[in-house]
Image (cartoon, rainbow, N blue to C red; front, side):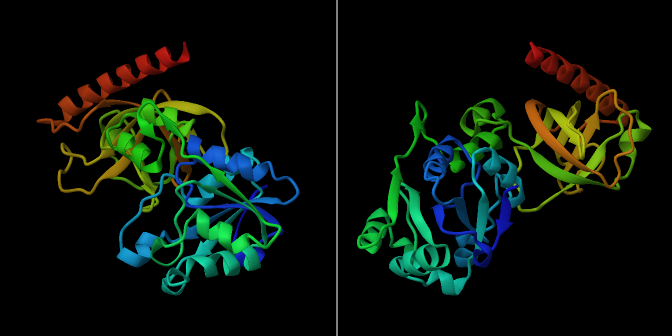
Length: 307
């Protein structure tokens, strides 16, 4: 199994690529392929944690994939270890040349370095592919440069995936990701209102560092931990305007035709298609009738997707 490790635990020498690899989209996969092809060394991905912009500019950076979520994807692609480099103020002041020498060569013992053509790194992002070339020119280390991948809509990037997810455009996000977007959460105690009106829901506690799609009601596949079965579901992502408009945004999942105690279990949710935006109804009966319509619409979507 692929391991999530610190730099001090690295199995070396390595064939390595460094970057955020957020989303592990088609462009990332092309770069990863160049890492795995160098089969004399341990195929390795190195990323920073926390994100440099969180440290330097105090920005909140929500991830398309948390480190633990990347592991099974990277393993399928042939990567053997994901190294998380602790990013702090001291590291941010390290020159680009020193980063190559101290981190990539000395610590991670890279024998093959794969980067994208636009790779920037080091103090004030002063380093690029030429910095790496100059630093390794008298060594036996290889440098592989992967061109930026584009399609008809432009550059394939994590930012573009976020934009599509914010618009709830799951279909086009899927095309770039090459897989369905999903997130995990632990079922926590709710107010039980859904159950009293005939639509029990599981309230999920999601890692606050995880990027989520735009608010709304979705048809979604739900998988219960330790199970491979995908269950047809309706998911509400956002506020609860009819119940209490002042409550914070939440993720609730109703499993269609499935009555099971989910409390404290972990669920994986895969949104399929947005059904509607948030609506504030005049009363609970109207809300219940709408949920019934949501369920029926979701079932139609699942039926179409199975064809």
